[in-house]
Length: 417
Image (tube, rainbow, N blue to C red; front, side, top):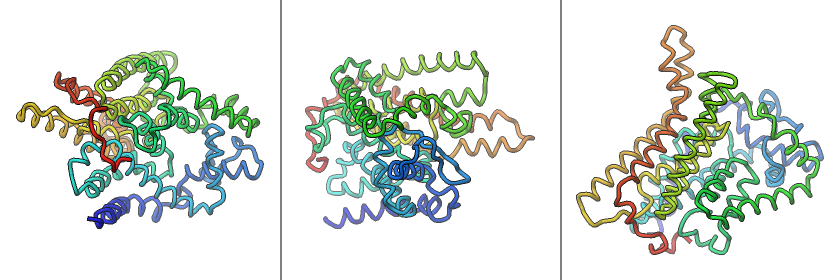
């Protein structure tokens, strides 16, 4: 059925139409693809010799480049194309990357479709493009889809065929060289005593960073010696878009030292429980659940996590639905197990389909309305991340999970290579 792949591509393209029309066709031009404009301007800065971290995008945004110098080097090809072309190509690449995330994270679900695999992939990908974090990534022209895909491919077991000769940890290290938040996977490696992966990731990041330092010494000094320590470059940390636990505390208080202490305590509690869960999932050969948990921790524990950083929710939903094979010894228990996973996946999917943080802002703009419901909505993605962590624990707490078939013993279809 060769017609299925073209049809699947058409379905995915149609699913992307609402976000594309809203953010690339009808969106105000002074807000059009503002983040990919930042990347492109960094490439322009290298080619023209202007300081990378002193340059700003055009008014009214006036956004600085906030990534390490290696990311600016990767952005150089963008400078050779007109900005309008870059915006459309970047959007297409985000849709393709999200489709690849669904393919690699959801293969054990997709493979059950037999000859209808292409349409199953399209059916799972379509609603993922409507999730608030994913559509926000399209709105701004963000890089998160590529970060999620890189880390997923690095940790997924069995490894994708095209990476079987690439040491585990290399893609995480490259991702760290572009954006610092994937460094949370190094902590996960250390918690699991996976010393080789940790050293490979850190070594790759250090090697790439030193290479960028040789090519761009002034920019490297400017970033590591100044721009990195300036939180104001990231935007207002207390704004609704910051859906990390720290962003929540900055909005609701308390302020000052007490607020910092509370945040550190929350980071310690959520971090200990989250990394413990990720380690258990790794021991059970559930690499998709492992990536889902650590990805959520990257958002919740970070001082700043914009809404589009929650692109990890794509992996979370597929982990909840059951990216791993279930033990089929008892039909009744198996049916109950599936229903529990289905409920959990639908809860998280529905939660992040809604744009609750912005509903909260609309509510708070009515001074006569009670404030509490507005505050709850305003911080919904923080709560959603914590709820997703709890659901990942819930669907995996049954003793039968420990009897899952080890990943190494599960035949990997040739299509995944």
